[in-house]
Length: 90
Image 1 (cartoon, rainbow, N blue to C red):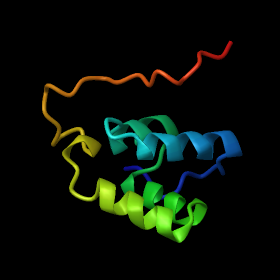
Image 2: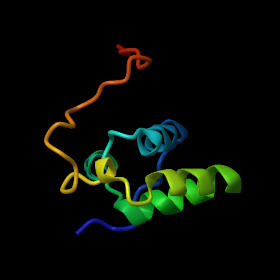
Image 3: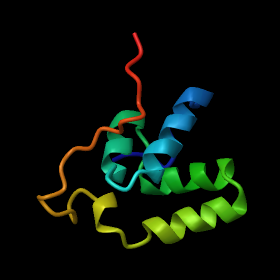
Image 4: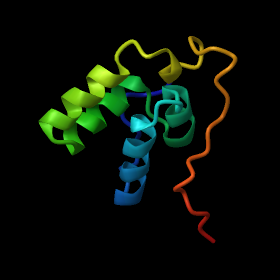
């Protein structure tokens, strides 16, 4: 079972990536859990801590009940998405 918060603190780059993944419509919470070891509750706590209150409210309204944010609920038509703005770093 994954914990709400991972045992090692995240650095700024990791926090930024979790926030980016959480905002993406096609990235399920399970992908964040796999990569960073935090479940949906942990992501919510991180977002609440690192976003302005108004941004957090907007994000929660956007993700609440959204089928694509949960791998078990999403349609098989929704496939992996790679953001165009991401630059491969060497």
